[in-house]
Length: 112
Length: 113
Image 1 (cartoon, each protein chain N blue to C red):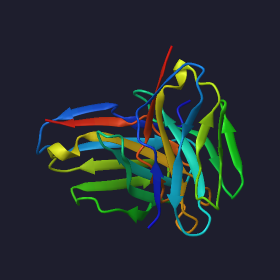
Image 2: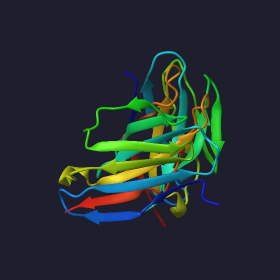
Image 3: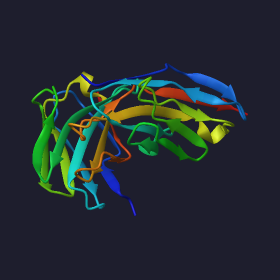
Image 4: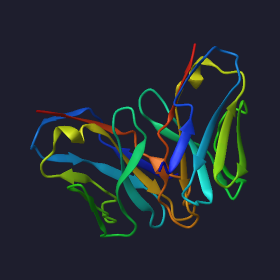
């Protein structure tokens, strides 16, 4: 059973398009995250939701909009995609009050 | 702000050699410390963790000790295998904002037969 899953695994699209990445966790956690990993493997947190409420919102262009329909899902919608958005995006989850995070397999986004 | 610094890679070594990846951190209070591993084409997996000073985390032959006095959490393994080839990330979770992980830049390790 996959604990944290993401779809799609690969996403290739043109500049200017709008795309979404979905994330689901079946661990019963109440907190979910989105990270961006650039080509040099550097990981940076983008957003975090706790019980469907946004609690971390780093300096990210407002073209990126997270949506959490329930505690088990956190989707990432990206408008007007740019070349610089090409990266691997990781979803993660944790249980509130515990620091350990569990990561999904990642979505490799390529913007042409 | 909080930050993590780890040694740059790639680190290339032969099978059965000893591995040490240095990690130091800057944080207020007593953060929790982690090592995550990312195998090629995969997501991050927790390798080990330590939540307070002098704790030693260990897993799969890897060890790291939380040293408050030197603000370090160095990763060590006595005898590496080819299957240990991966990118290793040191990370901290602050005491006052436990969700806001800070990751190091990652260290690529390549083990040759």
